[in-house]
Structure formats: structure tokens, C-alpha cells
Length: 73
Image (cartoon, rainbow, N blue to C red; front, side):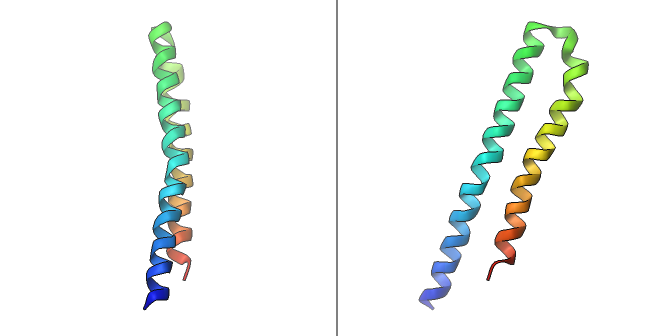
């Protein structure tokens, strides 16, 4: 019984740690994009798609971490 609780705790810690990277990356990405649009409003059309792609790739890292944690025994 004690071994199972340690495994659950390890999975929870792994998910928490692996969620920080993508969260920080998405926050910085959107922050810099909004700053750029604030400085140059005409750049909004050029920044929107790359910003969304970058956020999607960063979010994919979190999803991969979730899959790995659930496949661990």
C-alpha cells in the first residue's frame, strides 16, 4: 500500500514540474507578442499565426508529459 502512494506522489510531482516549462513558455510568448503588437499595431496579422503555433507546440510538451506519466507504472 505504501509503495502505491509513493508512485502516485511521484506522478503528481512529475506532472507539476513538467507543467511549469510550457506554462512559462506560453506566458512569455504571448507577453512578447502583445508587447510587439503594442509597439507596432500593423504587425498583429503577421504575429498571430506564429504565436498560436508556438503556443500549440509548448502545450504539446505538457501533453507529452501527461501521456508519459500515465504510462508509468
